[in-house]
Length: 460
Image (cartoon, rainbow, N blue to C red; front, side):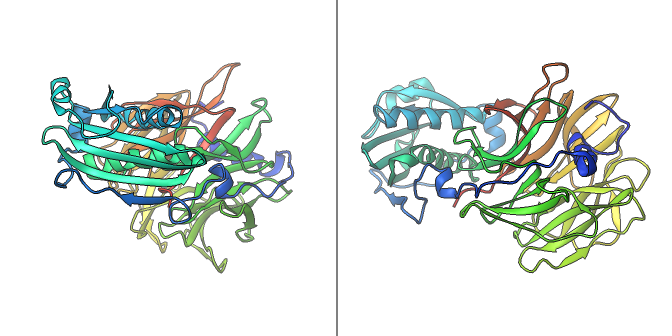
């Protein structure tokens, strides 16, 4: 069962330990899909997708000074018209969903697709910003968009994108990120992907394959045929590290999304568990089980050189996560008698405990903003997903359930993706997202069950 306090590990970590010696080993077949294939054959920025600034029809001005906190209290009313029939409508639909799903924007339908808008009616609607745009071409598309400040009548942004028609969805995400950044002053997260474990079959012996999708659930692709657990995105490279049960010995592999190739990270003196990358993408920390405990081992991605970071005499140390500057690591350990969160230097050494609430803690992950650490906690038979400050203060719970686990931050640190498992005969794993304030929880649609999400950096 997922709801138990007997163990010191979350479900996903407990599963990894349990399967060390009892899982059925499926073969790891196929070369996988390269990044270009994942995007439907389209090229990317710098490789066939061109962005051209558009001359302003009015004087350029700085982005509107609206903070995220202000937008949470009063979402920004923004007018988005259709970009035209066919692909234009599709782009409008994805852009509308991206902005609406944040809870920070209130999208208003508009009729004017091109030209300078008539700002009078938009002001009467209470709109703060407006978009105009159009799509031309067929096999090769030119997508033009402009962002306007309704109050001043001036253009904030104007860009034209030229790319393959297969990239229309990505263009919509890129436009959404531009609007997010110009209106809120920080980078968006729409042009990102989520790696995860696609789960099918019965709960006793599920089929678990490495998969990837856009952050909104589109472009779902399965990357492996073998039993896979605990994937982790490289924060600067197009790679995912994951734990595989393709052979009798579990191993950590690194999958290159641009080529579809994979390789073994290194061999361990013990059984590896879930990997985690450093912020510069050059180091992977892997918990390695030995006897009744596990230690954290740092592996250089290039050379495979290993360095043990913990030496806690049989305690279980798992779920490591770097601080954004790479200087510290938060992790879960039972060295104090019960599972709790600890922080230590990235070079190892003494660790200080930061969690003191009731129950057992796990699944620690540091926000890319550096301001929060997300975690799961089991207390009174209930799973909770929460955040706290890096010093352990300010702990608050965002959502609860039969099982909620595996939190992962989007690149700007404003949203968490996680796995939710329902109980009973119809138990199913789903991947959801929630704002760090605890609002706007939603489920990302997937063809099969999904667990262990890992959020990519912004696409490049």
